[in-house]
Amino acid sequence: MADIVNLFEVEPGQTIRLYSEATAEVVSNPRDGVWLFVRYLSSPDDPDQVGQEDMVFAQDVIELVAE
Amino acid sequence: MAITFQPSAYSGLVDQENGMVSREIFVNSDIYAEEQERIFTRAWLFVGHESQVEKPGDFFVSSMGEESVILCRDREGEIHVFLNSCMHRGMKVCRYDEGNTPIFTCPYHGWSFATDGALVGVPFYKDAYHEELDKSQWSLIRVPRMINYKGGIWASWDPNAPDFLEYIGGFKTYLDILFDGWDGSEGGTELIGGIEKWMVPSNWKFPAENFIGDRYHNISHRSVDLVGIGPSGQGRRDNREREGAKSLDVSFPERGHGTVMFLRPEDAQPVESYQNDPVVAEYFYQCEIARKERQGQLWRILAGPGTIFPNMSFLPRQPRSIAVWHPRGPDQTEVWRWFLVDKTAPPEVKEFLRQYYIRYSGPAGLTEQDDMENWNYAHSASRGAMARRHHYNYQMGMGYAVTDFEDGGLKLDGTVLDTTKARAGEQNQRGFYSRWREFMAARDWDELATWRKGGSAC
Image (cartoon, rainbow over all chains, first blue to last red; front, side):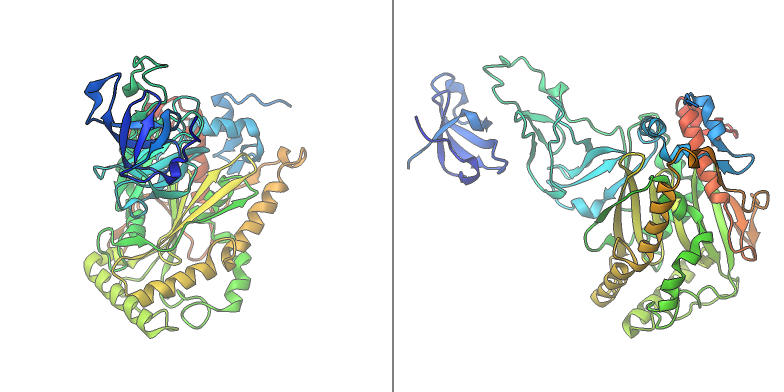
């Protein structure tokens, strides 16, 4: 299991993998340690999400995806 | 003897006819709790200044009564005031004094709110709430009444409160002197420095009544006057401005507001002041000339300390500042003080005033230290079982005020007590407590807007 991601250190442009197995690009980080603003890159459960912007909760962030 | 604080009891606690006020209203915790409900959820309260939230996302955490509120500017540039309490379990969604943010996130369970108050982030919204939670119903609680008056942000929790300008009535003359430029230009002020905040072990009404017009306590500040470090180089800065002036206490008892002032003679001319610094002296001298030209007769008013009911006090001249007496229990007041300068004043003038303000006001200021001594010890000496049996005396100047004051063609609204010879009076304090009594007894704003009916709520 991946280490807990410290949201304070996540930068816009990085890619994250989510609890739902979706991946998303970080659009902005409010730096509250709880939320990230993202744009979906892939979403096996809900392909319609791809391209959409959303807020992602810290506990839904599984890991940073290496470039 | 147990006291039941039914609305009818308040007329006994504030004996307007005999000029006496029970100490219970300062020290009794049941009365204090009632004040939070009956006064602080219904009156217009000062929250902050627009210059504290200049950019989208800027926020300033303030108080309305005991309750924390967020003053913020949303992404569209609109100013809001919200209750600082998460709609899920009540946690403060903002625990900073001020800053800039895209969202307010509750640290307890993670609900987050946009700067327009909308609930935008709910953890596990899809899986745990099954997308069935109606987010639109769970926005931050927004004050139903808010106004930006010349940069000052005011709010009321009561949707039926009268419009702000109706609430302040004729007191607008004095509030305008605070927020307008020294030359009389509309809303020409801005904040300088930070907000001074400190605790005073005293009931919030002590400072409120002190600022509404207590000239009687000037003896407390005699040591400051003796030190003579005023910016005019000798004694009080404003002595020359007051030559030949009448001393007036102006009260609006139907609203609870009041102020003290000096009224210059009809033929008065601007005089030099702030002679410690030639640039500052010249700036204010030219502003006085400009204001005299702009305002005519109103220029004669040298406004002094005042209070807008219930807990906003101000000094419209110097040190030009706003104080809010936040209630923090019957025996504690958290004082916040904002300082104002002319937006267009030269930097040298602003810096000169900053130094002057620091020397004069706040917990380290020479004058405010005197006041705190009085409030602290008066309060603590009024809490005991014996002390509480005895009323305070507010009888000074009873029966000597007029409601049709006119001097040299200048008519003043309100109830005016000429204290030129007497040097002090207590009609403003009586007006304040009369209004307090009405707030504590009245059921709603239909009863509180007594000026619409020409009567009293009690």
